[in-house]
Amino acid sequence: MQTQTESSTLRHATRLTIEGLQYKLQLFSTCLDPLFTDTGCPSILQSRGYHAALESSPPENMAFWYVRIDQEDTFTGMLSFQVKDFNPGDSLRNQVNGNPVNRIRYGLASRIQLKVLCLGNTLVTGDYGFCFQPHVEDGLRTSLMMEAIEWMLGLKAFRKIGLVFVKDFYTDIFHSISGSPYCKKYHAIETQPNMIMQLSPAWSNQEDYLASLKSKYRVRARKALELASHLERIELDTAGIRAVEDQLHQLYLKVVDDVGFNLFVLSKGYFTALKASLGDRFRLWIYKDQGELISFFTVFEDGDTLDAHFLGYDPQVNQRHKLYLNMLLAMIDYAARHQFRELQLSRTATEIKSSVGAEGIPMWAYMRFPRKGLNWSLPYLYALFKPDLAWEPRHPFLAPVG
Image (cartoon, rainbow, N blue to C red; front, side, top):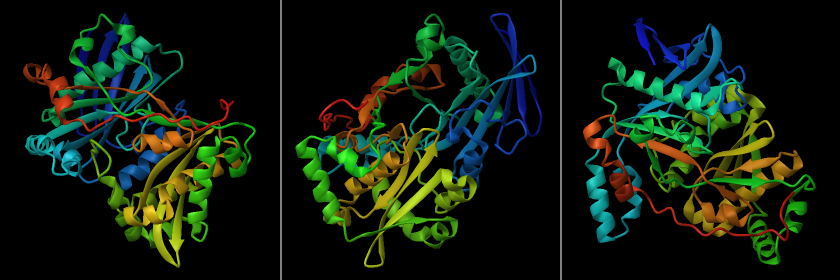
C-alpha cells in the first residue's frame, strides 16, 4: 500500500494503492459539499437530507466529517464520521445507586476525558457509517475504512483524538482480512444487540398482531392499551413539532440518562430539523392526557423498514399509563397497517422489546486507542466501565412469524 497526501483549506485528499489499484480519498466537513453523495446508499440515514438535518441541529460539540472514496475517477464509497468529547462517567452516574463498587467505577470514569473519532452514526443503531458500491468486496471495504482512519489520525485536525470507535456491523469486519495488522489494533467490544421485529405479511392492523401472541403476552398488551385508552395520540407536522420543542426536549431528557455509554445529548431543535428535511419519511407522535403533553415517539420510514428513533416520557407518568409499552404497540400497529417488513427498535430496554416480539441481533463494534502504549489496556478499561448488558429474551408468539 502506497500513500500520497495533499491538502487545501477546505478539504484534505490522499491517494493510496491496495492490491495494485489506486484510490483517492477526499475528506470534508459537511454533507453540503458537492463531494457528498448518497448514490447507491440504501438507507435514509445515509442520505444528504438526513445528514443536513443533523448538521443543522447537532448535539453539543459534535463535529461531522466525511470521506469520499474514488477509484479511477469512479465513485467507490462514502464514510461518515463524528468527533465528540466523551466522559464515561456520564454513562455510569445513574448506576451508582449507593453501591460502593459502582461508586468507585463512577469516580474513576469521571476522571477520563476523551475526544472520540467515530466511524458510524452515534445517534442510531445500524451499519450506517459506510456505503460502498455493490462490487466492492468485504475485505476491501474494511481495508479502505481502516486506511481512511489511519490517514485521518495523521492530520492536524485529529491529533487530539484519544479513542477511535467503529460501529455497527452485522458480521466481524476483520474476518476477511485476518492477516492485516489492523486486526491487532482494534478490539471488539460487547454491546447490546439491535432489537429487530419481523412483521408477518398477514398482519394488517394491531388486532392481527395481538391474535398472534401467546395468552400471557396478549392479556398484558390489552391491559396496557386499556390504561392508555383515554389518552389522545396526535401526529405532528413541522409547525406542530416546532411549537412544542421545549416540552419534547424536556421529556427526552427524562429518559436519556438510562442509555449506557451515551456520547451525546440531542439539541432542542433536532426533531424539527428532521421533519423539515425529511417530511413524511420522519414521523413524530405525541400523547396528551387532558391536554397535557406527557410523551412522544418518533420513527423513520426507511424503505421496507420502520426504524424507531428517540422518544420521551416522564417515568412516573409512564408507570400510570404504561406509556412505553403503548408506544411500542403503536409502532407495531403503524408498521402492520403500512405493510413494513420489519420494525427496528434499536438498543436499550431489550427485555420489554423482546416481550413484544423483537429479536436481539448481535452487532459488532470496535475500539482502539491511537497511542500504542495504551491500546493494550482498552479491553480491561472497557470491562471496568461498561454498563450491565445482561437481559433475558422472551418468546411471545404462538408460532414463528413468517
